[in-house]
Length: 304
Image (tube, rainbow, N blue to C red; front, side, top):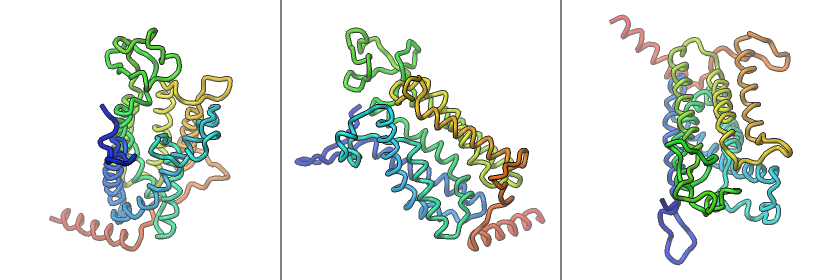
């Protein structure tokens, strides 16, 4: 499938499937996050103002992380061609950078609006996983993020122009018989399952769960999934002298932070440098009124 939908005649401007899919994914993830915000008693419309800040920050972060990852892996392309760093149509984004800088944009927005940052982190966690999953077909179209050759029946074919390393040798790895692990598909399945777990916990224990617990769960599940899937990703830069990618190191740190966050939040352990924090979300005046109205409605329905 051609990754380019069409090109404007007489120009180099093209509409790519990747961009269209990402735009749709952002909207869907926004709707899921809006539902999550309302679930926690806050005004759901706030999520769209947040995206105005979070998305641009996320795109910049995704590009910078990708470039840094390439350089740390020994790549010279961006060092020799620094202007290529801002050439986004060329491709090259990394999810971790999108999350880190997107969170920064989110933090700026919620602080300017006097909102609870942790509430929005919890609301966004399942939306991020579902958004990731829905965006992975774009990797299939671009023939990227695949794994090693496999004999498994769900292996996919990769054109010579999209192959890396020794698999470029078409006489040794012919197109007709060589298939590769669809690692983007593995991540898609994992993310849907992980989102289901977080949503189930958020709904079942809505009255008991503490702020930031769902986000801590996201750190653990996202990190665990990436640790496993990275074993099938030969394209990721490695720590010199090892078979450990930089992404696996970050994923391991995410797991540890998520675990310690939960243990501290529920005071199973006490960390001197980290307070457990509040037991309830801090709602804005509009959110507090919405939650109060919902409580009154529930009481009337129960009385009936």
